[in-house]
Image 1: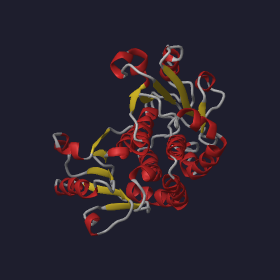
Image 2: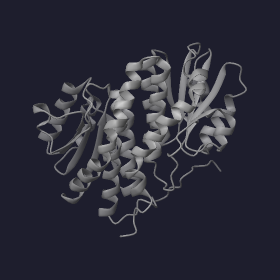
Image 3: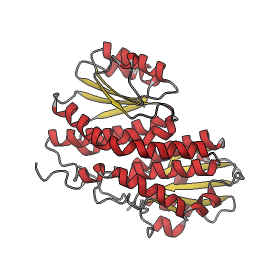
Image 4: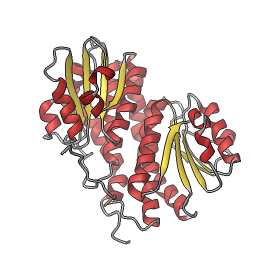
Length: 352
């Protein structure tokens, strides 16, 4: 087991450096922002990705709508490729491909399928500037996001941070860009703190019977990604839901030995904590990731504090990711599963 995670661990642990490099990269790609995000003439902006990149697309689209006040949607790449009529409406459209490698078949084929249509403009975000997607469409690039491991970790958080910072810059609001810079500052100490807490949670308890990740608004995509991380790394079954939606039927799976991870927003904090309290009463252990703790979070068995209470939920989104990734990593080790070699997976998924 000593050799397990030799790729995955340093990529999770090194993600703050990847965020900082992404912030510097933004200054070099202001033309990309001007050409794409500042153009208010699009009737809709569509973010597409596959797997983790689709969850990134959800976060990016949510932030785009909130900070720019324009229509934006997120779809799996295959929906644009195969069900474009169900996923878009007539009018001028900006398609933003999201792909770590820039080689995922669905995103490349989706871009190719629309790039010559008169009402579509294409662009993307990736970690590989010489990839197929980057050759097809002008791309934002996360310079330190590239990974050797199969499971996305620092690529996910750095690309998410980069696009949100780009949206902040496009908004013309110095306050929004200052929020992203404050989040970057907070992130430096959060990665080692996340490492220590995740190890404590996993090593200090038997394996949980099931793992549930909850989030709302821009944090819903984070919950889905956290769910996927532990599933990929540790081969355990887990699910993710919108926090309040979990009460409408899915909560029936909660029993003693469940772990409920609440990625707590400030916008809906009081409502979401009522859900956590209810799950605690059913016998679940509760982990809350929040900007700060208080009397209202006292019901939690574990708490991860990001800081930044005054920041928007969008700006704080990436700060929760190191903890959620480390939980997957340490759970894999506890199950004697190598997170560097996830079962049935490859780094790039291609349609044969």
